[in-house]
Length: 206
Ligand SMILES: [Zn+2]
Image 1 (cartoon, helix red, strand yellow):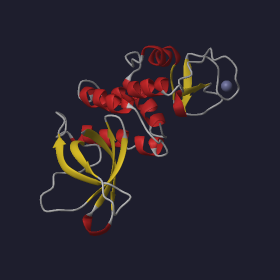
Image 2 (tube, rainbow, N blue to C red; image 1 turned 120 degrees about the horizontal axis):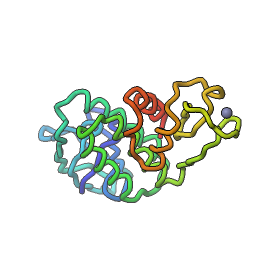
Image 3 (tube, rainbow, N blue to C red; image 1 turned 60 degrees about the horizontal axis):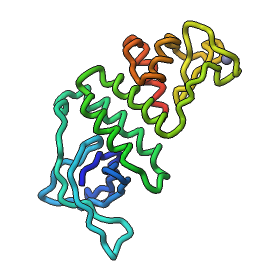
C-alpha cells in the first residue's frame, strides 16, 4: 500500500516508530533498522507492507520504497511540506479510523506543491479539510463579540474563524479575499503577505 509519513519517532538502536496516513487508514508501525533500507523521513510518500506480529502489539513496517516528489530537491519546498504534514499527527492522534479523504488531500497537495506558492496550496487544502470535517464556519460575525464584521480588514484565528481586528490584535487580511477563500477554496485574491498570515494561523494547529 502507499502512504505519507506524518511522524517519525526514533526508539532504541536506530529503530523507528513511524505513523503513516495510508489510502484509508492511519498506521503506526515499527521499523527495524537494517542494512538494506530505503529512506524514511517525515513527509515522504512510501510504498510499504505491514507485517503483524503475534509477539507485539505493534505491527512491522516492511518492504518500504520511497516514492519521490518532483520538488524533493528544493529545500524550501521540503521544509514547508514537513511543516505542513506534521500538523496532521496531533490532529488525527485520537482518530480510530480515517477514510480516504486525508490521503487524497495529501495526494492533491503534494502534486500542487510546486505548481504555485506552497503556502497557498496548504491554506486552500486546509479549507477543504475544515469543510470535510464540518468545521468550516463561513460566518460574517466576530468569534469574540458576535457582532457583524463590516470592516475591510479581518483578523483570523485558529480554524480560520473570523474576528474584528479590534477584538483580536493579530495580523489581518482583506475581508473579501478571505471570504472568497472560504467560499471557493481559492486564495487568488489574497496577496503573498496575507497568505503568510494565514499560513501562520494554520501552523497553530489544524
Ligand atoms: Zn468583535
